Length: 357
Image 1 (cartoon, rainbow, N blue to C red):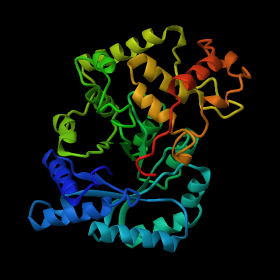
Image 2 (image 1 turned 135 degrees about the horizontal axis):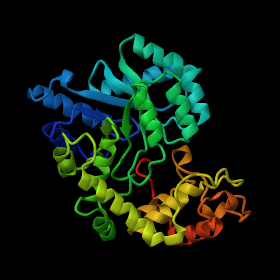
Image 3 (image 1 turned 45 degrees about the horizontal axis):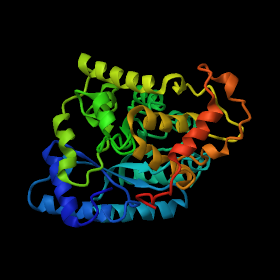
Image 4 (image 1 turned 135 degrees about the vertical axis):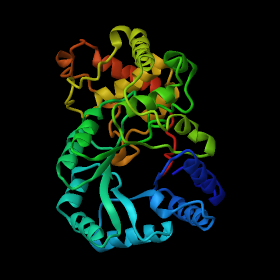
């Protein structure tokens, strides 16, 4: 999704990925010219004798909505751009709302997926979701899907139980952007680097997810060098080592000590909020900023609130009216309205353009 400045850039990244042992390439028609460049790059490598189609797992996506014929036309266009007769995996791209889930389980989307599978145009179907946990659980339990892509991060483990539920059901699980959306870990601040020592923050984040059995990590490479950790960690599945476990404990302890009695345990007991304020998510951003020096990431994410539709939170801390309903529920007796007000003061800034607006 990021190697889209030129065909040459895409070719360099794809070749580097194959060189380090990556065999799964995931794209989407929503990612600008990515499908077209990827198809051209794969054709070039095939003509050179450097790639056999059966050695590659290819995934693309389909936005939910519309009629079954429209969806089939969109998938056919993806196949044409990619230069293949069948894609191994098709993901419903952004299954974020109850209406979108209904579309794929009971509406035109269900008919569409059945047709695509029956005609051999896709090998299996799954979904990506940025939605709430109850919606993801319903999707997992529907029996409709063979894999899922979820936000699973070292600093945000809210959906880890859902990932483990999916794995127990035999679904493949892919972590969405452990690096960038996981905290801009590809460019960590000095305080975070110190907290994770002797490991790099991104190295520790990747190993944490692999140790949980997550089958695939997305690597949004812009250049071949972005795949260095993939080369080093290609065979690094399995439980955490004692040193890795100690580093993660050190990381969490350092953040908690800096927050002191303002530390939020992310238990979600404060919810629901009458104003729909996503209290844990907002306090998590505050804690990343104050606890580990991750102000740049926290500010970026905070200022996307309300600007990314169903792909991210809709309500920021300003919506808190100080009603106090959350206060008796908090096991840590946090002054939640005060912390939300402080979150907005610290993180509110001029909004930036999203990558795929």
